[in-house]
Length: 388
Image 1 (cartoon, one colour):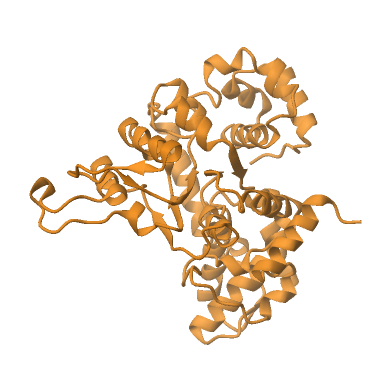
Image 2 (tube, rainbow, N blue to C red):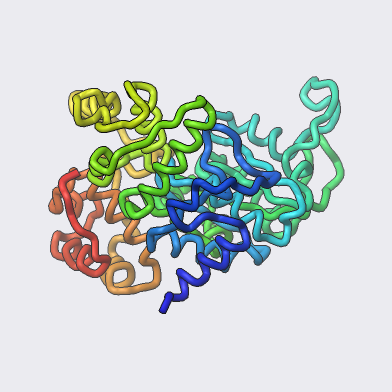
C-alpha cells in the first residue's frame, strides 16, 4: 500500500500532468503559461521516482493551497525555481502572474527599485517604474535568494508579509498588495541571524512553511528519468536521435553531482556534443575527458594553497561552523535527540561531510559537536558515509 507521501505526490502529479515514470517522458508535455524555456527544467517535467522527491511533492501539495509565505532551501541546482512554479500552479494565485526576482547579482538599491518600483522623477529618473510587487498583483512573487537582502530590504519585506502594504520609492502613498511570496536560499540563514545580518522576525515568518529540496545524490532513482528528459529535449532542439546505453548510464550513479540537476544536464550535453554516433557507449568521464573533474581538482588545489577568510554572507564554508555557536550548546538535547527538524539536520550533516571529504572527525569539528554525537546523528538519519 502506498504511503501518504506517495499518494500526495501522485495526486499532485496527476493534477499538474507531471510524469512519474522515466518512460512517460516521451509523451508530449502539456504547456502552461509559466513553463520555462530552453535551459531549465520544466514544471510539467518534474521527475519524482525517488522517495525524496515524492516527499518534496507531498510537501508542495500540502503548502501550495495555503496563503503562507514559503521558504525553499537547497543546494545550487536542486530545482528551487521549478518547485516555486509548481507551488504557484497549485495555489490560490495560480490565475495571476508568476514574477521571479533575481537577487544574486543585483546591488541592494537595484533590488529595492526592482521590487518596490519608483515614482516618476525619483533620483532624477524620467518615467516611473511599477515594480515587481505591483506586477505580481494577484499572483506569486518568487525571490530567488533571500540571503542577499540587506536589513532595510528585510524590514520592508516583513511589512509586506505582516500587513500586505508597501510604498514605492519616492512615493507618498502606501499601497495594498495581494501577492503570494516564495523565497529561496542556498545560504545558512541561522548563521546569518546569529551574526545579526538576518532579521529574526523575518526568519520565523518565512520559516513556517519550509521545503528542503534533496540533492541529486539523495534521489538517484530519478537519474534515468532525468537522462531521458534531457536527451529528449537535446534531440528535439538539435534534430538528433541520441540514446545512452545502460552501461554508459552506470557511472552517473557514482558521481557526487555538486551542482545537482544542473550538473547532470551539463554532463549529458557535454557527452552529446562529443558523441561520434547516435548511441553513446561511454561518458567522457571514463575516458579522462570530464572537464568538471579537472576544474574541481584545480579549484581544490587553489583553495588549499590560499586559505579563504570567512565572509559574513557566506553559506556553508569550511572556515565557519555550520550551526551558530549559540545553538550548538543546546544541540545534543534538541537537534540530535529530537525529530522536529530532521530535514534541516540532514542538510547540515551532509554539507559537513562534503566539506570534510567524508572524514567524520573533521565533519564533527565543522559542526562543533563531538564525534560521538556525529555518529549518533548519522545513524539516526540513516546517512551512509562515503569518501566524497
